[in-house]
Amino acid sequence: MAAVLNDIAGETHDHGIRGDTTYIMGDGMPTQFEDLLFELHAELYPGCTKVSSLNFLVKLMHLKVLYKWANECMDSVVKLLKDVLPDGNKLPTSHYESKKKLSKLGLGYEKIHVCKNDCALFWKSNADLQTCPICNTSWWKNERGEKFHGKFSTIFH
Image (cartoon, rainbow, N blue to C red; front, side, top):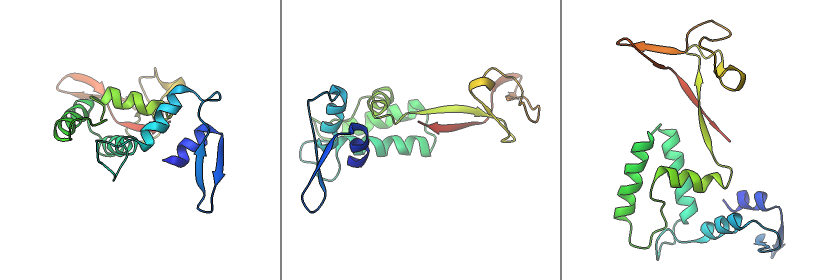
């Protein structure tokens, strides 16, 4: 995680044989980046030495995306963890807060609808199309007389 923040900051000085890195704070560095750098080394809860609050949040969001948890599911998991972790923990209170914090790092994601035959993405110039531009299949599923969007993929940015 430190390497990611190092790339974002752009300004570092290397010290020592082990390659320890020191970040230059202040001098034009955005405040939100300084906040993230602080979070990288901040304890998840008082006395926690195994994982930082930022590292834990990244791992939790990875599970959300990997196992396709709904936002409501993520909210419930975060609420449960918040209740179980000791007072003073730095876990965000919701999926929205988690996503907002990680977006400062450029670690966002987006769900994009895909043709059920995996021919094309309904994204950018194809976002408003009703059928696949390659196989001409509708991107809508029809169950019990109700139309809803079919298959989707997750893109990280």
